Image (cartoon, rainbow, N blue to C red):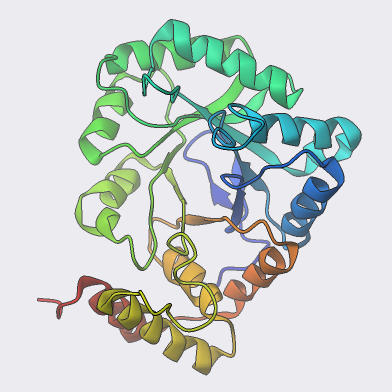
Length: 305
């Protein structure tokens, strides 16, 4: 299947769709709305529709908890038309030093505060950021349903859930869960073997892949001197494809993630407008089956059985 910026990935059975590349705001910070707007427009320029933030993003910056949502809210207030061009996703459920809370009272409050910071009436995709094992999935499901019925969210998803945790929540949901957001990259291959991507396909969920460049380790340039043998081998395998396709290594990493049949949506993490735009080169990469498996073998550090 040929994937282009015009391709649309269904968010489960929610009726919502997104482009094959999304933009994540884990590092979205600062106090200058004009600079922030340039980053957002760079993502829109390459066709991104999913914009993924969270209330915890910015916690370690001087602005503190909620900083990324506040900054995005300022941009949307200054340029309201941008909101119409994005599917807005956020997350709640992490609040240091708890660290996790998915209780009905906390999630309801967290969602309402996110709406206030963002300056919007509804969040398109609201996600549980990390599983709270002290809250029963029935309670989580009921809370998400109340938020949806109140018009505060359109769809719901989860982030960093394991396959069994996902199954348990899906069994309790009164409406279909839309998405799962795992860490997935050529250096974070656990979702391929721990059952998570299989569970996503079983339940018909969209997969939103965070850190598809492995915290930048798969970005351009040679592996750093401190890189281990596994990272160097993965970079070398990606570089061989990049040389053939005439694209940057990062584009191949994105394309490798997108090639899985669960149709993962890589969330671009860069805050540099030029690097954001460069991600569009992923659409020009047609990874051959043997090349995809060569990258996987390099990541495993051992031949496939």
